[in-house]
Image (tube, rainbow, N blue to C red; front, side, top):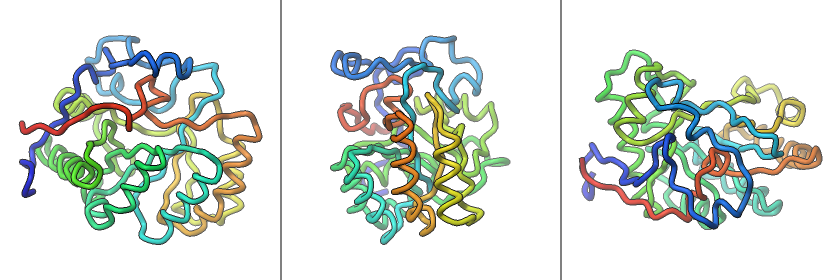
Length: 256
């Protein structure tokens, strides 16, 4: 933590779900419905995204637990070949170890989200411990690519409702879960992972997979082509929510 205090926070003017910053290019870019403005953010569930209600054929492809030194670059090649942008919820200590992979993610237009520093189950953690896990990862990503994540996914989805509200109030970060689970961590094989993605996808959906499993990466050509073959279009999590693209926002890390 040589450059930033551990308790760093996002300088996100207008980042709350109740009042997102929407640039004119982003509004014109796609008619994505947003969860913003549905209600005042007074509960953790209000600051949680599982899916976004929209009739448009948009969905978000998300990958957890990376970056992996070998598999993630292979996956990035596949995504680039198809012009698909995904969201990578990275583990902070992996981000610090492989900053060049994060730099490629950003260069290719992908979004980077926060998946904690060391991947603990956050059930039973104090608020200070949760923020420490998040802040250390924000700093690692910032040091790698010059901007911090704007969304957080708790490992295993384990974060109490009260703490989701706390995280949103303290750091302006919504908790991102999922509506399509490939269950690839159970290692069912690449064909099963692909089938679960293709058959489970839906408008406004958030697909969960992991870029640390070789079978998952092997499944992606068939899975991605199958989803787009059904008429769906991949966008980043920020875009699905209704925010501007993460790589086009001027965000900064400021000391608490």
